[in-house]
Length: 263
Ligand code: MF3
Ligand code: CO
Ligand code: CO
Image (tube, rainbow, N blue to C red; front, side, top):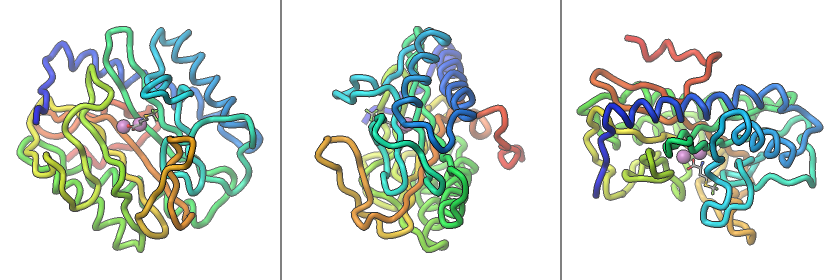
């Protein structure tokens, strides 16, 4: 197991990658409303990443993924493929997952939930899922263990009657899209589940939380992961850097309140 420690030069490049990923989300957010297709969202993000940022959308052709972003609606857990078949409609919830690879060769990876119109169930699920991410982020500092993050996520999800997806995890990130360690979101086995965090490590936390049970399956397109029981599911993701005293949120958005980290 090899968990890289980023050099100061790499950290500078990761900051830029994270900022870029956040800027894609900021750019697209006003467009995400009833009537737009996920294909249109994909094209707007692709053009912005390539033409405005001068970077590469990392998902495109990644192990054969056919589009530039992932759009996962309602019971789709992750890796939904954008298309022009159906427009977003009131009551839908959607995860948009953006990964940018900069010209310097570093990755920024972040995802957010959108609620189209109103969804009482969806709003509660999205809020609790973001709280799961935030509670784990608040634990990050040198000396903390990945297993503590996992337990915080699982406890908060289950205390609210939800389940944690086990089939997908967070990951180290840098020059590689997916590096060591695997970052579990539940109390389970992984080679680095007990990893002691150290300054300079970069990884994502990206909990996927279901209203129903934790089981998922991948559709015949080879990508789209759905809840087996078709229950609603949500995910939030940040790319994070372990600092001397805590965490730096490399993909923080300008409107995001991260004041809970400042103590
Ligand atoms: N961005 C996803 C993650 O958080 C990975 C997407 S891989 C793709 O790790 F091929 F589906 F794009
Ligand atoms: Co990720
Ligand atoms: Co992602």
